[in-house]
Length: 378
Image (tube, rainbow, N blue to C red; front, side, top):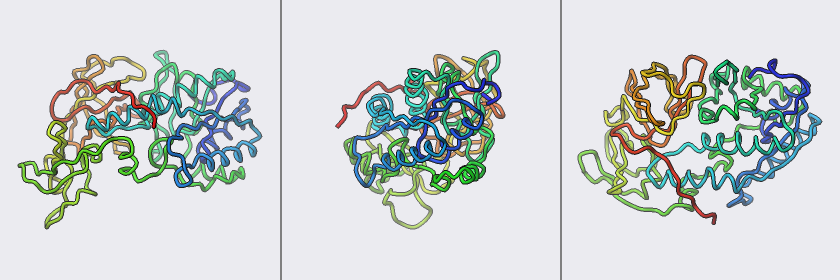
């Protein structure tokens, strides 16, 4: 949705994270004479401490931004919803041998569902975020567009959001570049203009991931073997490793580095291959499940398009076929390196994001990847 498509003076609640992107998104709406309210969401508190809890500092930055822009700031705690709807599924998918993408689920369940519902109780017409993406309304519905800054485009993480949420959402940074955003923040006197971008797990922050995960799932040591069955080491638990991983394997010896090539959950064996170009690390097809099509559901098949199997990957030419009941097979023109079950595959037609799904397998047809197990909070 472009700014000119909405009437001035409508009430927009902006997610204010304490970072520069959300700050400038709010500023742009203020400049365009919308009635703007900021909302700071706290979504994690299970192990808050002085080392890891950035929420207090982020809240202080959010308050500073809103004072400067002369807008109200509200706060809300979605920690319970985040645990139930995102984190417990995140843990279960790791234990099931997958490598999940929590940002996708977080956007769908928290930022564009819980946040939207709460904003509507405040009388909001729309919500807005600092995502680098765009929306365009057509007779079929709302199309999701790539952000104009190719290096910051975040449509990859938004493919699972539904039409009803997009109908009430705004992305003020659609046409902006990161350098422009920082320059605008500096011009407006926002102290977050040079604040570094957040990394790590969505809403949880930067941590030593293996140690963090080990607090919630049980270690299950097993063997590391070559593809021909030679034992070359031991692993701490399959959930701590991902396809294509090189670091942390503890395999010495001469020759090229070793990479994770496969995980055998039934026998608790981690398979490795030597050399980045080993054929076992490549696949020219995969099966995707839990598909979400943004504007047309389902599309006509076979559907030629482009796709990404990881964020920031250049577009890869592919054909989607055998679409049924939320499942599809995807064939690539060029073999893809380290196709990782549990990660997202997102489809594009030029600037339009068509939708996406979860990578289930690149070797054999498995049952649809869905997770229902819930984890009790500690």
